[in-house]
Amino acid sequence: MPAYLLDVDTGIDDALALAYLAALPDTEFVAVTATHGNVDADQVARNTLALLELCGRPGVEVAIGARGPLSIPLTTTPETHGPQGIGYAVLPGPAGQVSARNAVDLWIEHARARPGELTALITAPLTNFALALRREPELPDLLAKVVIMGGSFYHQGNTTPTAEWNTHVDPHAAKEVYAAYRGRQPEKLPIVCSLDTTERMELHPAHVEALARAAGAAAPELVLPGDPEGLRSTSGNTLVRHLSDALRFYFEFHRHYDQGYLAHVHDFFAAGVAAGTLEYTARPATVDVETDSPLLMGTTVADFRGLWGAPPNARVVSGNNPEQAFRELVSAVGSLARRVG
Ligand code: BDR
Ligand code: CA
Image 1 (cartoon, rainbow, N blue to C red):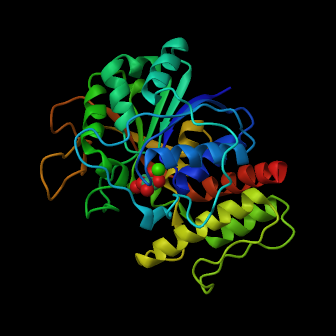
Image 2: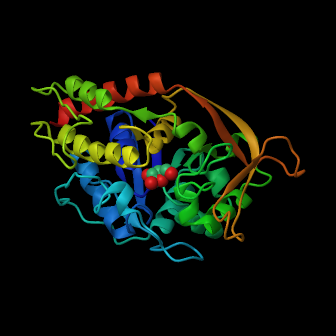
Image 3: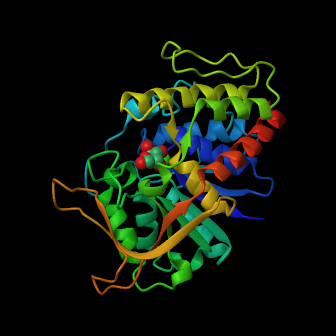
């Protein structure tokens, strides 16, 4: 049974990643921790708790760690994910409470208690993970697998011309994380899902419609490019309604940036890589992050050819299969929505 430590900044595509993992029958959420990013950490924690409850997973410990990046001021992105971070969706207030424990303590405690058992998935800036690595440098050996959504290598950035959002929010943390993996065994290196492959994950309105159909929704769930912006779903299925409202916002955002009426669902792809359910290929690389140049702040660089003379510290995903991934998403989250209503 795959057991996960997750760190998220929920977030529309984080929400889809959580719903997908919740949909898999054998997922154990050991703890889910919240990092600032798309919205502030407290809002992330509330969103995450509410969403897990909607997905039929009450009682998961959701905790906050740092409330800002290691060395620079916090930026959030309400224009990308909506004021609450879930697009147009307004999730019900969670029945549970955000844990009073510290996210970094939780990661270290669980990793030590279950050496070699836990899969870590980080779909947010790397602040909490960097802090955990400072406190427990053996974390890379204690964790069974680490998957990170972040970076942009031979692909344009989505925040600056060269930088990806998660890395841009806390570039110093990302730099520390990659430095901590220098000299580690190849099978322990983090699997990095960068924009190079996550921007191939183009979710379209037809996927929302198919998901609602798989959920057994009474009426077709139509999210159309010609709809007035901000229209809300009337689906009788609560999970479908919230995901549809979330994704409509993301479609409009991507269209606003001339990418079409679609949504890049980065974090869902990373979740599938963590779960081992989505097809991908990866290449070893030495990764570093620019933290000094104002022009290139947060830019990730991968040396695939050993030009720096430094051993690989990451496995960078180089190929994926969006068609297979969306089939899997529609079927898994559709069945979950059918179950939880
Ligand atoms: C990443 O940034 C966030 O806005 C998304 O949730 C994803 O994790 C993509 O750059
Ligand atoms: Ca995210």
